[in-house]
Length: 433
Image 1 (cartoon, rainbow, N blue to C red):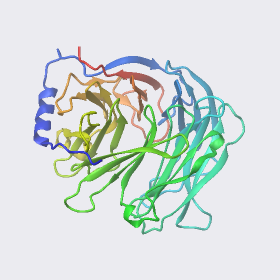
Image 2: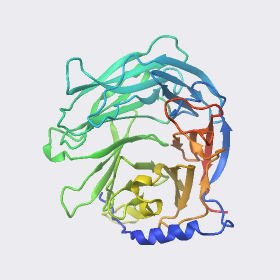
Image 3: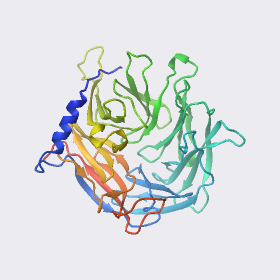
Image 4: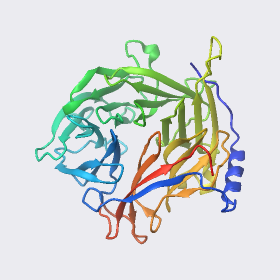
């Protein structure tokens, strides 16, 4: 069902934000710190851009240190176990624009959630300039043996084609890995594979769009996966086909057997996404979506989809509220705007995480884009933090990042003495107190 769309007026959002910034400190925080846990220093915890992946009741922490992969299991209380290491047997290809096609991290389960790491990348076939093989390297927790490889498929992309996109994610249960890939700007299917233990294919190879029916094909961008509770999904954006049509955000929810369980579509006039700056999460009864663009009067936008009530009639229509919450002009332009880190529900309101130069910031809004409470800055000794990795759960947002000395500016992959990694839980109570 195509949802109805609410309009927005960006100048109202900008004025509201300026008013909020100037408000007194007697207002409650829009979000709260649940736990602030410094992780014990190790080669893994000090890896620059380690990724946090949900796996059952805990997490997997994984990162790339040069050509070395480091990973281990991390409890929600900050205990790291089974720290493992191996050298990547190959390096990923790069796109025409210079972006590497991997490595990406996901997990599967042999005997326990997240006890196998899946490292995904695309490499050029030997002697080819336009055929990319998608490889999944599988490594067992604590194993001293090298990883094994599964070849998931091939993507043909000539130099004149659009940009090759490759994404990967894991089910919150830590038992399934999902890999998807395709080429932007082409009327061709997106291929995907669901993997189980040992990287084995679960079900049959799947496609988004049916190439046997040309009318079903569409141009797309911003390919991604969401792995927030309780499911795993593929997401993308379809630009308008005609001037009077809307941008369409699409979410394909996946079953554990690799089949598509359901679909949610949100049609929005303002969904012109730049640089893949988009985050989403399911809620108890719908979906939250936030994105950024650099069009005229650009900035940060959100959409909230809720299904119709049971008595909505014979042709129920999803209800969608959409507004701009932050204008890029407030930061000196789009290039200076902090990137989105996550969006999370807060009762009937929501919070967004922003990766600012002075550290991570959490802002809260209601569904009319009105600011709620004060901004929350996540703990940091000097405001100098590394890349953040976040997982949005039903009870909290779990975030990990490096906290570094204030004088440090990163010139290479090393981190300075005095750096530590934090695991922080961010709580968003339904009501401000």
